[in-house]
Image (cartoon, rainbow over all chains, first blue to last red; front, side, top):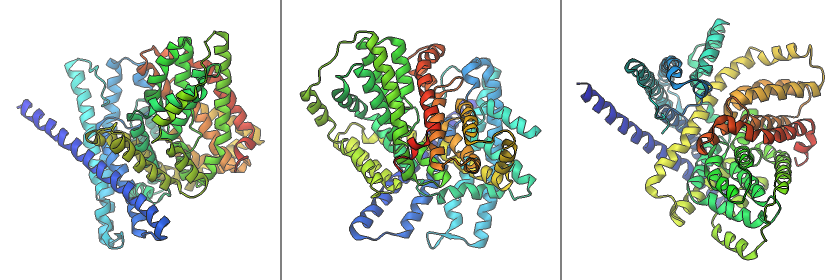
Length: 175
Length: 416
């Protein structure tokens, strides 16, 4: 039974990573091409599209949000990492469970606030890029915060498991 | 108050910084009875910051360069240019690292990409091991003050100071750091008897030919930015596309199939920085609305009367800050608060930026949590205490240069 769940979780993990990579590749490539395209238009034809600049700004936001989810998966969010450098792994994992739990809670809460904001945008029928409903552009935010909450919960859960089973996870979490 | 202490403890325990900042912003919002949804609006606000696309684009370009053989070519070229001088290879290391850091931001990739080539080479040339370790570790954050480094761009975005001015302002202070470290290196290697290499036109020509594809890069980017032809975000886009074409399609040093991995790796750092930026917009906006800078100023004006004593206090503060916080988080969190205070003491905002970054650069090397110390310890498999002590003389010299930079504003403002 646990094997089955673990298998599913692993599969989810691989799909998740692949999805993040695909989105990041798409966004980054779009950003590069749009920005260079704007330069070419400006230099050779003295024109430019306003929507392209807006889209570049939106891509930066999307990259930031999706990359944040990826950073949560790879455990690469910036932290003041004083503890793990000076305290043995065996003791450092207790506070790590607490802070990862805290992070999960915060992300869930932020996700909820973002969801409320999306609803508001929908209500007011805000638009971006001249005619696209703004809530569609920003819907990625609540989703991403919930995904981050899930990652931090997994990290905390892993910590709890390692305390229960008593073995110290020596391999680095960084990928 | 109690909540603030709890958050501080959580931060020290290693909670992701963005969650701490979000929580502190929330506390402020609750106190002022502002809807907590406003935090999300502030996060979305990062999309309206000017030139911000420069950060993901330059970071990506930097990662692509460091994954290719460009570091090797850069070392060969610098060596052909400077290798004949006394302390040649040490100078080569400093110059190459500074150049590479400027182009790749300041994310520790320099030590990994260049240190791995330079450290054994220095050893081979007979430099003492302690010196090599200290040199490579401290050179890893050199170049922070040169365009187009990420911290300079981020400071410009946050403070609304023209990024072009910052790029100009960083040149002389950055050179000062390089010169002082080079002087120290020449002096140390003068004591031991390194055989001098001869300058060879043939080797220089070979090195130039080898790096023919990367050579236009600094000219296009720096020339484009300094001449005002490109905005910094445009320069970043051109760099990213150019590097992508050269390393992946022309030189084929990075397989197309490996590209998604490189993109992901580079964006992990970007995501980490930008999410903190978004949360800090929320928390600092609250703090500015609540008049925190004014309160700080009122408090400080009791015992800080002159610009000189303000700068002294600022330096102490930044050194402590740099020891516990990474440079990116420090910029987004602290700069909005100290800008108005510094203005009251008549400190130029461009000069403030250079002082801020120069002091934070030391943070990479100061215990207990200097990032470069740990990367070097990990990369070269040396005990951390050993890295501390090896880096110490370099730290002292850099400290000296930071003091000069702080109290000699002309150095930063000359080229404006």
